[in-house]
Image: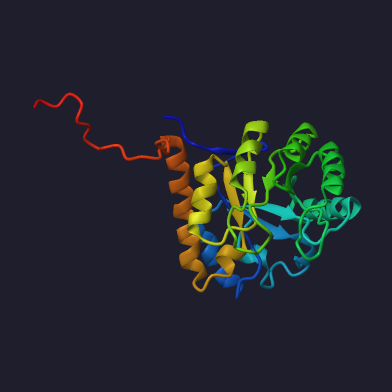
Length: 258
C-alpha cells in the first residue's frame, strides 16, 4: 500500500495537521505542543514575528526550520498590496516560497476580502510563491483561486478563534467536488471532534492555532488533535456506512433455517 502523503507545492507531508505558533504561554510550551501534535508544518504571522532576535530566544530557536516547514502568513493585512509586501518579507526572512495568504475584509469577523484575496493570489503566483489562501467557504471563490494557480484552498470552518467547528460542512463538500487542489479547513476548530469531522468529510488537512493554544492543557489537546486528524482520515478512506432512517439488524434473518 502506498504511503498516504499530503502534497503541497513540491513537498510531501505525512502529517495532515498544520499548527500555528501564537497565543502560547511560552516558547517552550509552543515547542512542546508542536511536538505533541505531530505536525510537520507550522504557520507564523510575519507581522508579529520578531525577525531580529534569532539566537536570543526566538521562535526559530525552539521550532527549528530544519525540522519543520515554516508557512509564513499575512495575518493582519487588509489590502492586497499589504499582503503582497508581507509575503515578500516572509520569503526573505524564512527562506521559503510558501505563504498562507490572508487578506482580511472585516476587523470584527476577520472574514476574507475575496476581491483582494484574488488580486494578491494572482500576483504572488506570478512571483513564484506557493500560495495557500485563507478564504470563505464559497465554492466559486475556491475555483477562481485554483484557476489563478493557488497550491491549495483553505476555507474557514468558522470565524478565526471562535471554536464553533464546521458551521457549513455542505459547502466544504461542494468545494472538494469543485477543485482538484488540496482543501484545508482553516479557522474555527475548537476540539478534536471538529478536526475529525473535517477529515471524515474528505478534507486533505486541518490548520489550527487557538484550538490548541487556548485549551486548558495545550499539550494534551495537541495530542488529541493529532489523533483526531488521523482517525478522521482513516475513517474517510475506510468509507462509512450510509445513513438510514430505520434499523437494520446486524444479523439478518434472511436465509436462517426455521
